[in-house]
Length: 132
Image (tube, rainbow, N blue to C red; front, side):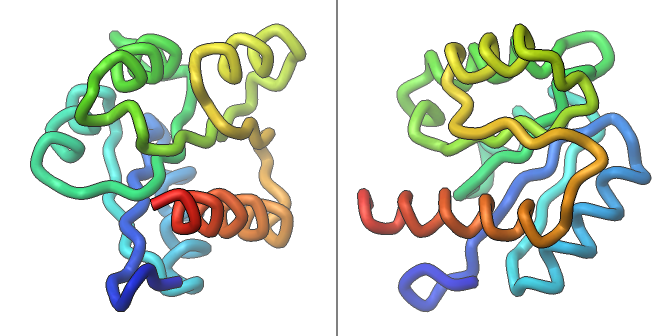
């Protein structure tokens, strides 16, 4: 999917390389450019040097949790407007509520439903495009 003749760049942050490969395959198939990070530290390095249009974030990350990363990027003027979708196996209502309160726009449970996942990613990117 494109935005003004450029391809959307999506950052997938997950400590499971299996999950990254799956999401990367799905999103590449839709025409997105994918950046991947196996840790929050890697994710910070990417968002400092690259324009990212959407972050797909796992909550259970080593050392620094997905919650902490989400909270930090939402505090920073340079990253606060990047939409974040939580993609997590931790699907209880409290985690969903906390994620949305910290600034995530959506919460998708693992294992993902591919069709539903693509629709939700596209909806957020279209919404971002109309705001920009």
